[in-house]
Each structure stands twice: as structure tokens, then as C-alpha cells.
Amino acid sequence: MSTRSRTGRVPQPQTPHPGDAPTSRRRVLAAGAGAVLAVTAPAGCGLFDDEPEPLPEPDPLQPILDEALALAVAHERAAAADPSLAARLTPLAQDHRAHAVELARVIGTVSGSAAPGASAAPVAQTLAELRRAEQAAARTATAAARTTQPDRAGLAGSIAACRATHAEALR
Image 1 (cartoon, rainbow, N blue to C red):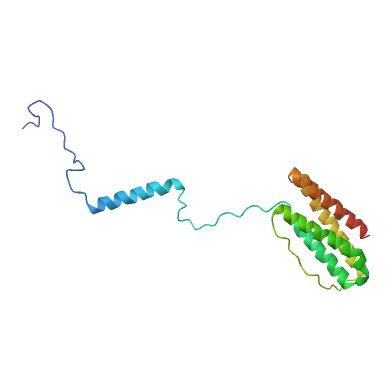
Image 2 (image 1 turned 180 degrees about the horizontal axis):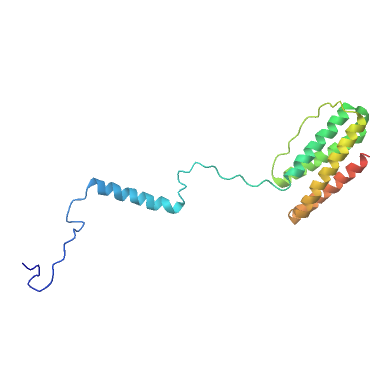
């Protein structure tokens, strides 16, 4: 028996049209799930991602601010431990506190403060330690002045010069 119709053509199988048969609940749910995936996939699959946003890079002047606060505290502690050094060290501590305030303003943060504590180190050792700390801090500020943005380089350079002067005053 031949499968050809009267016109000589082979009949093609009929595909059902959407209106021909009732739509099942499974088909509707599958289509809905597919639509949700299609909408969320371009968003980078981050809709339900619980990972926190990456922290911003620390400000390049932050180490100078941290050192300013540490130096202020070190000078204040030394002056508290030996009152004969107060006249010599208090202005240096005040310089560092002023630097910390200005750096915090430029960075956009709050300047911390620490209360000075007592130290039992001998005066000569204390002055030598303070001098080494000032020299290291001057190097940090000098490096920052070379690499930071031009509008901040002046501040970093000024702080570096002040720290170098402090180191010489502690001889």
C-alpha cells in the first residue's frame, strides 16, 4: 500500500498547535522556571549571592596617619615618664596630633587618639627610640609624597620634613 496521497505527495506528520490540546500544569511551571532563569542569568547569578562587597583599598596616606598617632602617643608617654622631657617632647607630640587631624580630614576618616601611658625606659634609650621612630616615619612620609596624588603630595612632603626635623631635635 502506498503512502502517497491523491496529489502524489507524502503526507507530513501533523504537529500539535498550542490551541489544539489543553496546556498541562507541568508545562506552565516549566515555562515559568525557564523564564526566571532567563531573567536572572544575565544578572551574573548574584541575585541570591551572600558574599560581601570587596572592601575598598586602604588610603595611601593611612600609614602616615597611623604613624602620626603612634608617634604622638610615644612622645606623650616619654614626657609623662620623665617630666624633665616634657618641654622638649610636648611640641613634637602636638605636631603629630595636628598632622593626624589634617590627614584624617584629607582621607575622610576620624582621627583616633590614645591616652599616654607611663614608660620606665631610661631617658637616653627613650630619646634614641623616639629618634629611630621619627626617622622611619619620615621615610614612610617621603615615599608617600613621591607616589601619592599631586594634591596630597605637599601634605605628605611637609609631614616628612617635620618628622626629619623631629629626628634631629632628638639628638
